[in-house]
Image 1 (tube, rainbow, N blue to C red):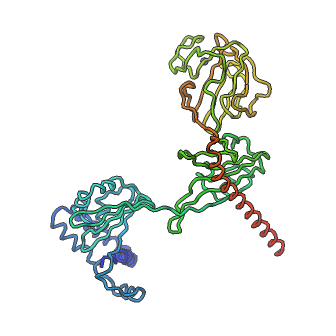
Image 2 (image 1 turned 60 degrees about the horizontal axis):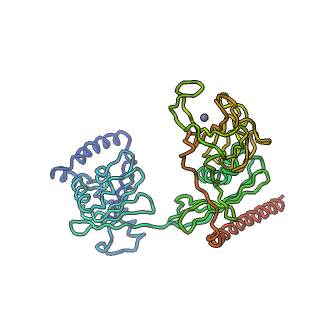
Image 3 (image 1 turned 120 degrees about the vertical axis):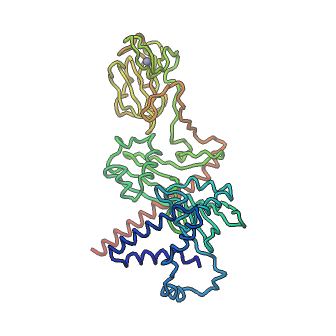
Length: 456
Ligand SMILES: [Zn+2]
C-alpha cells in the first residue's frame, strides 16, 4: 500500500495546517527530537524507533480511502505497482538526507550504492535533480535518478542487487517564429516579441559581423527569427537553436540560415552559402618582416624601460599599404598618444584589431566606417613613439590582448562547391518556412485591423 505515500504527505500538511500555532511549535519540537533519531540510524534500536515514528502517518484517514474508492477503478491491491515517491534535490542536500526523507535508512543507501557501479552517478547530485523511489515493505524496489527531464537512470531490484538502465527521451521539437520592429533597442524589441534574453543574444551574435547593435540600430529596423522549441509531455523545456533569421538594418537586409555540413559542423550562412562569420588575415601588411614580437615583458626601445609590447611590429617601407585583417567597423581613426596615427577595427562581438604608427589614413577611413577584409585602411609610417617606419599590430579577443602571430583565428569558410546542392536542399525549405510564418503574421495583422475597423 505504498502508493499512498503522496497522499500521506498531503495528509500531514493538512494536519499541520489544522493545528493552532503554539501546538504546531510543540509538534515541531517533537519532530526535531524524532529527527535526531533519524540522523543516527546505525543501530537496530534507531531502526525500531523509526518504524514507530510515522504513527500518525500510518493511520490512513478513512475519508481519503473512501474518496479513492469512489474515484478510481478498483484494482486488486496485490497486483498494483507501488507508487513512486519523488524527492527533489535541495541546496545543501546529500543522499543520506534524501534517503531519510524517502523513509530509507543509511544502510539501505549503503547497500544501494554498493550494488551497482552505475549508482556512483548519484554522487554528483545537484539542486533541482530528481530522485524517485519505489518502496515496498520498507525495502527499496526501484530508484530513478533524473538530472533533467530528458535523461533518467533507472535501477530495479534484482534479488540483493540492482539492475540499471539508462532511459533517454527525445523532446518534441516545434518550430517557433517571432518578428518585431525596433523602436528603441534590439533587446527591448525582442522582449516585446516574447523572446528570452538568450535567444536575443543568439540573434545578435549571428548578425554581429554585419551589424553593430550598439551603434548601427535605427528606429524602424526589424528582424524575423525562426527557431526550435523543445517540449516534453506538452511542457516547454527550452529553446533549441535559431534555424533562420533576417535582420533589416537601415534598409539593408541580412539573411542567415543554420546548416550542419556533412562533417557535422554547424554554422550560419547567407542563403547563397557564404558564412556569416568572416575570416581574418594573419598579417595585415604584405612585403614586411617582423621586427619585434609580442612580449608582455619587453624593454621599450624608446622609453628604455620594461613595458609590455602588446602587439607585433612589422617593419616595412614608409607608405606600404596596411589592410584590414577582417570585415568590421572602424571604431577609432586618429591620433592615440604613443601609438601615433591609429586605426582600431571592431570585428563582430568578439574581436578587435589595432594598427599603429600610420603615416596616413586611407581616404574615407574614419570612425564609424565599414571595412572589408583586405581593404586598405592606411599606410606604414613612424608617427608616435617609433624608431623607424613599421606597423604595430594588436589583436584582441573579448577585450584581452593576444599575440597576433599565434592567436587562433576563427575559421569560417563558405560552403564548398561539392556540398552546395546538399546545402540548398536543406536550407531552402527553412527560408521558405520563415517566409510562410511572415505571411501568416501579415494576414493576422490585417485581419486584426479589419476587425478593429468593423468594431469602430
Ligand atoms: Zn610595436
